[in-house]
Amino acid sequence: MVARTTALTTAFTATLALSVACPPGGGEPDCAAYCATVTANCTGGAAQYENEADCIEFCQANHLTWATGTGADQAGNTLGCRQYHAGAANNDEHCLHAGPTGGSVCGAYCDVYCDAAMGNCTGGNALYGDRNACLASCGQIPSIGDVNSPSGDSIQCRLYHLGAAKGDPAVHCPHGGYTGANQCGTWCQVYCDLMDRNCPNQFTGPANCDTACGAFGTNGNIDDATGDTVQCRIFHASVATGDADVHCTHASVDSTADSCQ
Image (cartoon, rainbow, N blue to C red):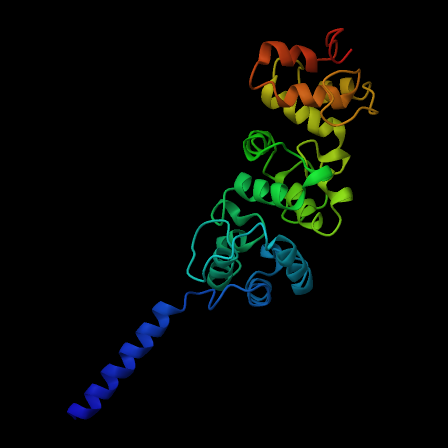
């Protein structure tokens, strides 16, 4: 009887140790294991990727911007954190944490965004001078889009294109920038979203802004600070948090002769 009790105790202890050592995501962080788990446990409306192959492609593209981490990570912009939450998921909130955006658990939106922007868009395709500039711009981007959407003025759309930028930076990096480059939101959607956030007294409502924006030229360059274009006005609207009195005037319909007029 003593021997049997000892054997049962030993077996229970071993099982407990195994359960502690193996978090829900299981094992060493790995794109194949992560993608098999997240596509199995997050389906329908909770799906984070179109299919397992798309997940693997995205994961491998972003593996340099997601730290590897460990299978026990429950927070932070790591592959391990996503794998952990993928293992814990059952078409619930863990799916968003396991997805490409991290759901503000496996990295805050702007941390994930800036890691991808600084990692996948470099040299002539660089979007920001440094990480602080990236974080400041990211704070202006809406975060209410659909995961992996290739269009719409959202952080989710921009993250989609920053993932694709690993393979084709010349095409996708501009779409991943703060302006969306007429892909992640039309020029006027981005402009009016920024004006509503940073210069709310310039227009009486979204329709008024959209009508006014339709008359702006669209042949400017991203980050232009002068010229009668929507790109110039987007630039000034985006930096209006630093000096609203000056930049909201520049971003307005009438603008000023030395800026967007």
